[in-house]
Image (cartoon, rainbow, N blue to C red):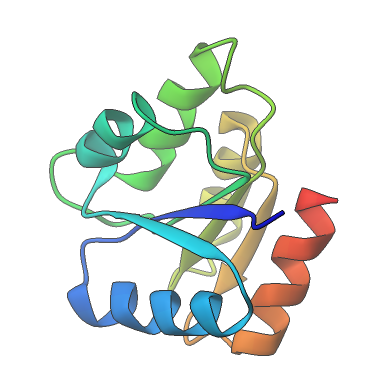
Length: 121
């Protein structure tokens, strides 16, 4: 069965890179442009894993994670944070919000896919 990944990133280039890497690995990919759009997209789908950026307009990635974790039906979805940030405080806040893992950009497609398979297992 094909797993579905929701990617949430305000960068069109990053969304395209993620889509290509994930499609090549056999995943179905749904995309959102920021946290607000991500919440809207989640109304109509149940992804196996969510990958979100941190710094986005309208709703940042950490607030997005906190919002998802408030919803009992979505609480178990693994969430990977994909960001240029490597700040320990942001990582700690992401963990408190409910992030499953943290990947620093630029990402290695092979490592990204391995991380997805680990958290989705």
